[in-house]
Image (tube, rainbow, N blue to C red; front, side, top):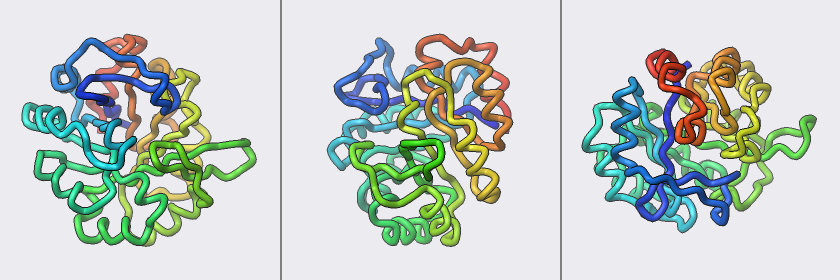
Length: 247
């Protein structure tokens, strides 16, 4: 399993949200492009960038910062946030993104998302299937619109449909854990891998320390997205390096 460091950008600055809530923002005094460069120096092969303004307003809003990051790194860049049409996909790919992350459209307009997958290719598209889990006995339900809306589609229903369409990369976040430092949803990712072994899952949300990464590696997830734990220094450089370099 490889760790993909996350950089969330709002108003051109590096921030983290608590459980995706825009009224609970922590701002970090570091330039997003400089932070990406530091992660690459540690050995990161991929960087995950989230355009929070795009996610909130429905169209990419931090293109200058994304272009700076993509233009100065050899690492792969995947970008999400506010990608609601094919023009936005082409714009981000043109800026140097290697993969784009599709969230709300995958949840709300699966037919359109599958058409993009076929046209652009499964190695350049990541579907962000973010979920809320009301009860451990209930199926995880997809959320959309910057996590503001819960859909009527379960994660398993979505994966059945998208898997048949050739989906390769899935980023799955348990939104109740994102930025909350409560530990990752290990059981969720183990079940994802058990049901859909052909999909490369990116686990996201809740990572607190290196032991959580070891637990996630045991689920069979391909990658883990880590943001706050790195920014806050909860995982040291020496602890993170083996995960950055593992395929």
